[in-house]
Image (cartoon, rainbow, N blue to C red):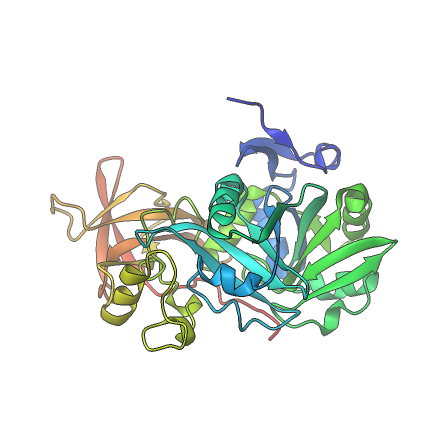
Length: 369
């Protein structure tokens, strides 16, 4: 295996005491000296800075680029207004998901942000599926996320104008001659921004943000617990090539125009399966899970209908301790129609422990609409 790739801000992470671990082919900070619990709660209370430069930033250009991208995604790309961003799903022929992503209409091009571990595979799918379009992975830009209720105040002081943005707006700004591409979005369940910045100015920009007493550097550990509390799926665990968007409870991301009876229904890989599941329901569905007691149930724990059942009916795909919830939380797949309040049993090291099916999210998102 090749050595993990260093992030553009590797020296800054070392200076801040970041504990580095391999992730998605990169060396990334999992936590800083304050620890995961403190980092998580700081984001919920104030603002945290995440280095997510491992993510892929992809520019799509060409005549009819939006309509072309619709042939690969089950969402309304054509109708996305300039200056707006939307959540999307890159589909596979059998109705599974190759990756989940964000795409933004920046006027003369579309900007896609894809998962770091999947970006090279995504590029192959995009280039093969979009003949005649220019598909370019950007190498010269870092990606930072500033998340939390004070993110607006902190960033507005540095970059006037960002406070006027609403959730899923995208705009360009100038900061000390650096061309910033900013979206009001994130993956924590908090208000905040994702900021694409040229690598040459990334460290200076990050240091300027961290100069605020309200901003703390945040690692992968808290990033995972924050998104879990917000009920957001992680690709490779809660969302995979075998799981459909409907099974993943992401039907909300498929607009009416792409559904059965819509003006541009279907026409994407796996449409037959996805549309049938939207109309008739899937066999399984992603749900929230509340383990009893203090012991977390993590990915891979099998779920049973009783403490004596021999055949599992589901599985946990993400789990851990929710610092804002003050208890273990998890997500997983159970038969569709399993109602909230149903008690199942997870097999944890040979012991059957009760876990209750619950609604998602565990923490209600606080976006600026």
